[in-house]
Length: 125
Image 1 (cartoon, rainbow, N blue to C red):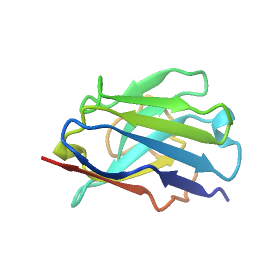
Image 2: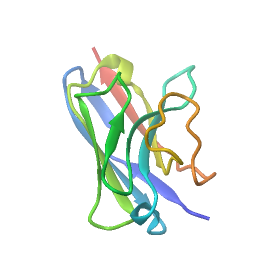
Image 3: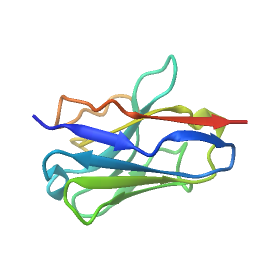
Image 4: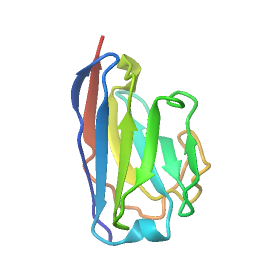
């Protein structure tokens, strides 16, 4: 079983930036894609950004041009740089390993069934 820990969330004004971090208990991102999911209040969890094991990134249209996903130097870490934040980005953000880094939306299954507690991002207008 893999444990995932997300950090770096917080309260920020519209237009601000945050950098989220993901740490896994095993070096799973050396051979799996790294994905960032979010769940907004009253909505399903959706995949918003992912990077393949080969380094190719994919983004949901809603975050394209504003968010950047990256892998850490260690194979158990990853990051999500979020710029130009909007109130609609308010959500709990989670990391995991999507089976398909090119997936989008709310039906993007993950390699691992376990989820971390997530990190809350709140963007005020």
